Length: 273
Image 1: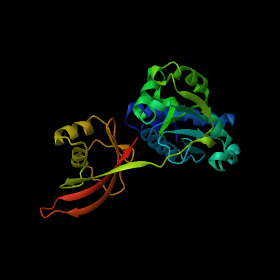
Image 2: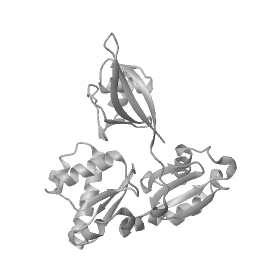
Image 3: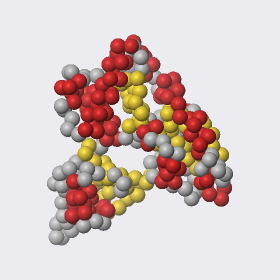
Image 4: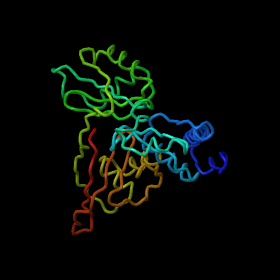
């Protein structure tokens, strides 16, 4: 499939820009027999490039964010002759290990447990860097592990120490093999809904009016299984992952019961950062 024909398969300009960049990297990887990588992609971008590569019937790629449950991932494109480099386990994959590093922040004792994901991300953004060079931020009781592109490690390690919030912290760099992975935390809620429509569920989860929920959907902030949804009447089902930009991520559970008036008691799991 030619590049221009491929671009016609995607409606949004941001998708076309991403696809164009990945297309060029794919061609370079095959022509020069070299591995090509992207920046860290969010779930929507991962879904977009996966669709593109499937259309191209391309199989020589992986998406990896440094650990099994990573949300933000890098696309690795490789030629046939280098396929064996990607056939082993992640901890044995030198390409991934050399591409993704971990900046570990250990807070002073008096601050431990008081910082959340937003404090770490906010600090990084204050440095004027783009979100795309940062992978997942894994918060723990004593601080956080931040996955970053290898070529930004030295800069970030130096600059983070200049931020007031981290001046007393111990900031070190470690390998992926030493990453401390915590289990994904979810908070359960039960909502009462008349039906499984997208706008109905968004409204109840966020405690918004139906019109406000519809505004979120129409403003392209709502994704189901990492695909953008703009139709209010989209029907949800069990195990769907609902992502609302700026509002969080949720997994649709089972219908626990039904009231005498026919309303559904729906279990929903909210992902906790």
